Image 1: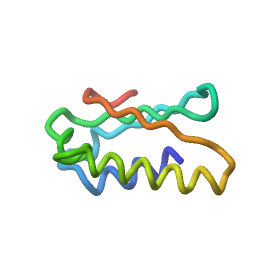
Image 2: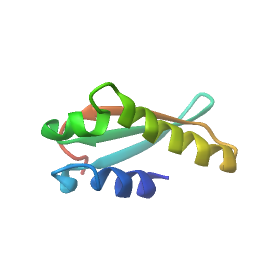
Image 3: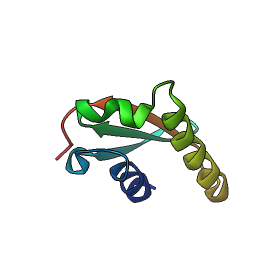
Image 4: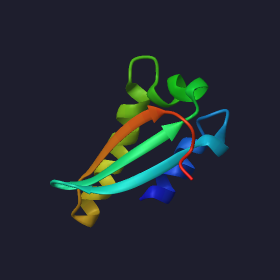
Length: 81
């Protein structure tokens, strides 16, 4: 799921090399922490949050197929090494 999320978000942003995702187990599912360049934050979240909501819907739809729940958090910052 991390690879899909990275590929999806890299298409939206100006600085695709700054996109990173960390996954961790969370109660009831998997928490995905998406980091993007601060200048790209608006592109990922959308003016009213619609873009981020759409990404979450995609993750939830795919998660249903896998029998898993995905939680997405988005923050600005440097890519994780």
